[in-house]
Length: 190
Image (cartoon, rainbow, N blue to C red):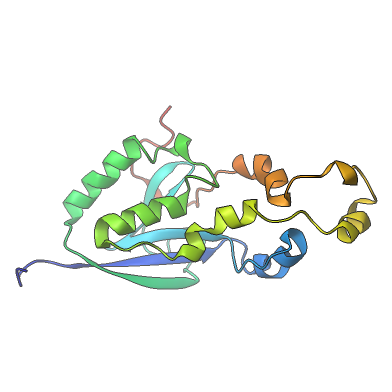
């Protein structure tokens, strides 16, 4: 390896969109403990890069309305130049990570950061983040007694799917795009 090769630090910024509420409410709502609802971003070359309903965006680190991250994970270093990286992001933004391709459970900010982390460092982001959508969708429905107290027997017997699956149509319609970023590609390319 050439000693004169420039290396750039790569970090994963992790935000809990629930601000701690998932930890408190998930056992009641899903019958399973979730530590957070994770939004992630890659920080490299002095900027924070993320994917949401507007496509790929960037801002200064911690510059979205989410403020500073809850956790910072050092992913390692990369020898990929900023110019090559920006070309890579532009390509992703015109195809795989256009705003209209955002899907809360299958193709989200965490999918993006995992792919970008692997491109830059060869490392994946933590599995507790990438596994969260399948964990939510596989949860059991609310306990019968709790539902009875909350809803007073309304259509209780008709709920036969896991609770995560019941919520899916609502959650699929959500497009998370933290304000404060600069869209790298043209946004929602249709």
